Image 1 (tube, one colour):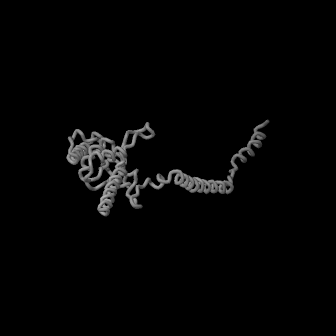
Image 2 (cartoon, one colour; image 1 turned 90 degrees about the vertical axis):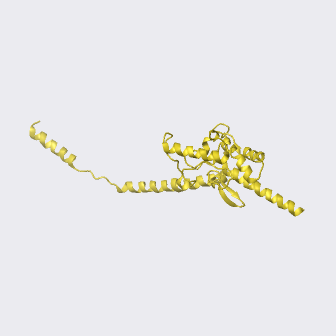
Length: 225
C-alpha cells in the first residue's frame, strides 16, 4: 500500500475521533430527584415518626424526659442536676454550666491547671466547713465537675457526709435520713457497670414528701384532739 492510500484511510478515523459526543442529562434528572425525595420522606420523616412512636410506647417515662412530678407539677428530671437552696437539702456536684442544660459542658481545664487546683481546694474547704468534717474527708465528687455539668448523682459517701446537716435542719433523726439515703442508693447498672450512686433529685423530693407527710399527720392528730 502506498502513502496516499494510507493517508486516505487514516483521515476518516481522525475525523470520527474528533467528533464530540453529547451526553443526555435529562434522563438522569428524574431518578435523582425521586431518590432524594424518597430518602427525605423515609429517613427524615417516617424513621423519626416510627422511632419516636415506638420509644413513647415502650418507654413512656424516659421518652418524656424522666420528669419528676410533685402535685402534678414538674419539679425536674431524674437525668439532670439542679441546684437546691437551703441547708435542708442534699447538694449535687458542682456545675461548670451553672446547671443550665442549654450550656452543658465541663471546664476543660487540665488537672495540672493552677486555676482548677485552686478552685478545687477552695471548694473542698467550703464543703468541709458546711458539713463540719475534716478537709481530708471531703469526697471528690462534691468538689469536682462532671463532663457535662449535669450529673444528678452522687456517690454514697458524698451523700453520707451531708446526712447530719440535712437531718438537723429538717428536725429529723439522723437514722431516719440515713435510711432514706439507703433507700435511694442504686447499685451498678445491671449489676456490672459503674459504681453505687444516689440520685440527688429523687432523694430531695423524697425529703420534701416526708416533710409534707409529717405535716399532714400532725394536722390530723390535732384535729382528732
